[in-house]
Length: 166
Image 1 (cartoon, rainbow, N blue to C red):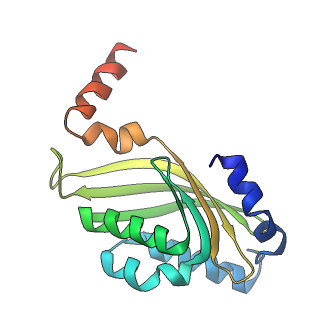
Image 2 (image 1 turned 135 degrees about the horizontal axis):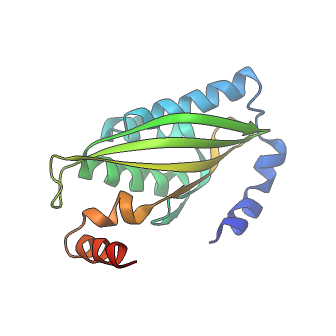
């Protein structure tokens, strides 16, 4: 599903979603920020349903996941495969029920050739909240080559070689 299809599918949330200028909207955004501040398996297991709507869509450049349970499974795999995932929200812009976040993510690797090393990537996200203050749409925009694929065996070597050549 492409970005425009995701926007169309969550258009009702955009129209009826919680305004982020209200106390309820501010609390929803704070819940989201807290969830990703230190993404642990326990937090994913316990809090995903508090943050994401039952029919939420998450697209993080690597894959698209539909439904809160699919989002939980994906985030749980991510949290379990890393020694640490921390996201710092640097800037937030809001428009109605939509938030546009600029963020920095540090991943401490527990696998690949980067085991024990922390890498940093930067990105932006479009978050759309529904009327209950839960995430209906979470679409990330980030450099998956530099933030993830460069750290994989073989693939990383190829990506670094291509970058040097270009």
